[in-house]
Image 1: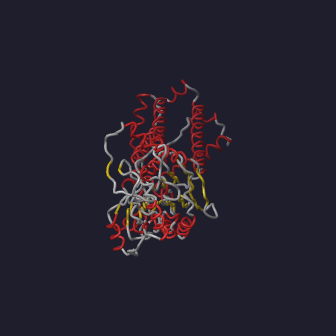
Image 2 (image 1 turned 90 degrees about the vertical axis):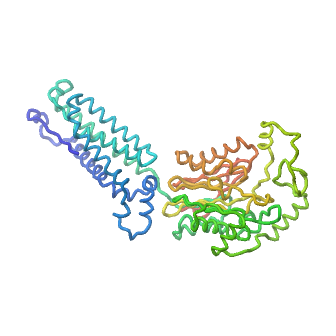
Length: 522
């Protein structure tokens, strides 16, 4: 794109040939303008240092860039979309410059300058609000139209312009002042943007004060382990420690006195998920979930078939997942006529079954039924349903989540909670953030609270407000439900929200010396 400035001979005397402060400022602004345009021309190389930009708009290139270091950069950046993004501004500017003088001759310089400015501002606004690559490219096309048009607009009758507005030297001075002001504001905005802290820092967040599990995950992160593997290390540590008796083997017996495992792992980069549910005889739930993700095209395996898969892939077993403590708890519950339990509208109500549907002679209306469901007391508490949900951001800025639990105590055999359900027990998107949940999974999975949290953060809502919103949606329908979520965005900012109990979650990052516990009140 060309631009130039010519001064008529009769106007030379007006300047006096002196080096003034205005001339110095103009030279500085011109030099900085050259730097800015030079950077823009080299944007194909510049984006290599913009991880957040690549993750958002060019995830395939980002994965190639962070992958095999032996691949040439020419191959890593082999993308027609990236080429289109880079060249769109200059192609649009070139095409526009061919017609600028012709349009100016017909409609006049003033209208055309205003029009080019409006197009440039529209392109800037569209680029700033871009949600996908095509909006970004369209914004750059508009920028090209505005810049190309403005640079090539030519006054057909400068004498007429001078007589109508001001003297020609004054016109030149006004144009220089406006241009200098524009570049100065551009530089200030660039400095302000660089001042914003968008650094991605490693972090581990977990439900409840499962300190040893968080430490295990953080140690993995410190060693340079991927987010997925760090999540597995953390949740696996909790399974081995039988955190609160509700994670791993030896806790939360079902109605038959047996312990089963639910687990999930999700990669926020690829959106791949592996999960197992109601898995028997295999204690390594989170490792089984990772095997599902890495070695099958499926998302969720359940029951005995999940156990058979895990054993065939080399996990230890089969083994009895019950413990003396879980058996003693189950026997005490049986002695109390199997109360409380998770049955409803059955007979006989105060026994260990077998149960049968209650008659319909006292059927309630829909409003009363919803009231009975929403206001029924919850059997879930912090010591019989403590799912571990964990989120990890690794050193590369990648995000993963995982869950592991042995489910609700005295659940009906075959029951699957929210832990292995994508978007309910946990959810992650690499360029946005992650969420983990715990509580009454039978209710929470109906609302997919973690999916809601992450999508709210995608829209720019801060983690605290996103978490509260997701919990409030459930509480409006089920005032007596018990549950909680934590939210963490890609910059490591975290928050929690709960209903029906006091919730605690654990955090370890590069700022803290050890795991920190945060307490959230309903």
